[in-house]
Image (cartoon, one colour):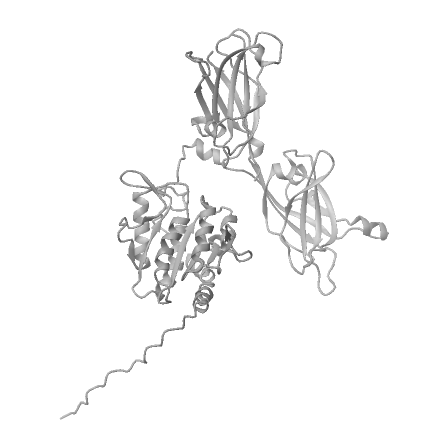
Length: 529
C-alpha cells in the first residue's frame, strides 16, 4: 500500500526569537513513547515574537496501522550555531501523527512542557493530505491483430505497465489479466493510483509491454509501446491507438510494420476517498444505521452479513435435528456498562445463546445491532475456542459442529487464532469464514490452509478444517440476491462433507445403523353393510 503523505505545519506557538525542531521515532510500532528519537527537520527562525507562525512544512508518510511518534522541541536562538546546546530550550511537546490527523480539522493543540515548574506555552500542529496521493485513473484497453505465438492456437495476451524512474530504469506498476486464445483481446478495466503509474508526473514515460502467456512462465514477447499520462488523458481517440513494436523482429524483416495495435477504450479520473475523509467527518466506529456500513439495516434488502448468514445457514439447518443454533458476536461494547466483548450472545442471553432456526439467528442479529456498539479490536480465537469446547465434549461422532464466521477481513489476534484452529483440527468441527466488503483478505486466505497447512508454534493442523470465500466473488451482476446467495452457499459448503468424512475416518467412527424402513400402520378392514 502506498503511504498517504501529509504536510505537517507547525503554525502557532504561544511563547523571543524561536525555532522549532521536529523529531520522529523511527520505531513506529514501539510502545514506549519517544525513546531514541532522531532529528527530522527544523523550521525557520522567527525574530522577536512570543507568537511565531512558522511557514516551513514537513512531508511525512502516514500509516494508519502504525504508531508514528513525533516530538517538537522549541529553542530561543541566540547565535548562528547549529548546535542546539548553544541555545535556550523553551519547551517540548509529544504526540503521534495519528493524533494530529485524527483531531478535529486535523488540528492539534498541545501544552509545551519539559521545564520543571514553568508554563511553557502551547503549540498548534496542523496536517493536510497532499492531493496527488488521492488521484486514481480507471483505464481499459483492447488489442487488435496481435502476433500469433502459439503453435496450436492463437495467443494468450496480457499487458505489463512500467513506470519510468529518475535514473532511466523502469518499475512494474500493473499487469492485466490473461485473455486466452485470441489475437483481438479486450482486457478488463483496471484502476491504478496516478502516483503508482507516473509518480504524479503527467509527462513521465509509461512503457507497456505485450506478452503471450505460457504455462511454464516463459512468456513470449509480442512487442511494446510507450505513452504518458498526459497522452492517455486524451481518452479514446486516434492519439491513443498504439502500434505494438518488436524491435528484434523489425531488425530482421524489412517489410515489418508492427505486431498489432493496442487501443485505449476508456479513461476516467477519480479522486479517491481516503480514511482521513471519514475522520474529518467525525467517524469513530461503524454505525449500523448508516448506509455505508456493511451492517446497514435496509428496509428493502438484506445487508452483506445477513445475506451470507441466510445463504449458508438455511442449508446447514436442514442437517440439525433440533434446529437450535447458538449465535455469538465479537467486537462490540455491550450495554449497560459498555464492556467490550469478543464472545457475546446475539440474543442477549449469555446463559442460553440458542436461537430457533436461522430465522431466529437473523432476528437476534438485527436486535443486537440496535443494542450494542460495534467496537474493535476483532478477535476470532474466543469464538473458535467457544465452539471447540462443545466439540471436545462430543467426540463419538454423534455430533459435528460447523462454525460460520462472517467478517470484513480485519483480525487482531492472528497468532491466537492460528493456535485455536490447530487445536480444533482434531475435533469434530469445521470453520467457514465468509469475507464481506471490499477489503483485502490475505489473512483469511492464510487461515484457509488450502495451499499451506496452517501451523502454530511448530505444530501443524491435523487436518484442514477452514474454508474461506470472499462474498464479492459470488455477487450476481444483475442484482439477483437469491442467485448470489445460492452461488455462495454452493461453494462455501463444498468442503464440509470431506472435512466431516476425514474426521470420521481417522477416528474409525462408522455410521450408525440406519433405522428400519417406515412401515405404514395396517388399515382396518372396512365392510360395507
